[in-house]
Image (cartoon, rainbow, N blue to C red; front, side, top):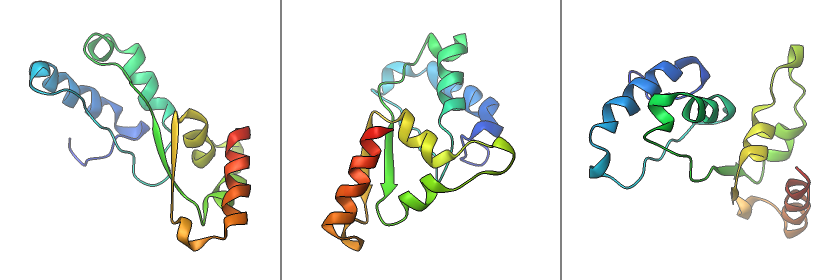
Length: 121
């Protein structure tokens, strides 16, 4: 990929790269796509599911969200301008699994509160 990013602005790059890999599909079992930081997973999911070049060769097995236990609540509460998507909320909502990191930086009570909140999303 040109710059390694698979956010919504370079999905054409993702399609091109995965299209090239499709010819070698038997050489690997899976592809792991990582979005760095806060990124809305919806455009990537949409691309894989609706682009025949992608959906004929690939399927999304799961979406895993790695979440910063110390700062996630602040990101979830962040008000975005002009109705923009809250990427943290989108990541959590789309995730099949949420892996909390930096749990050593919060109290047991703070972690439990965050876990309870995540279950409501």
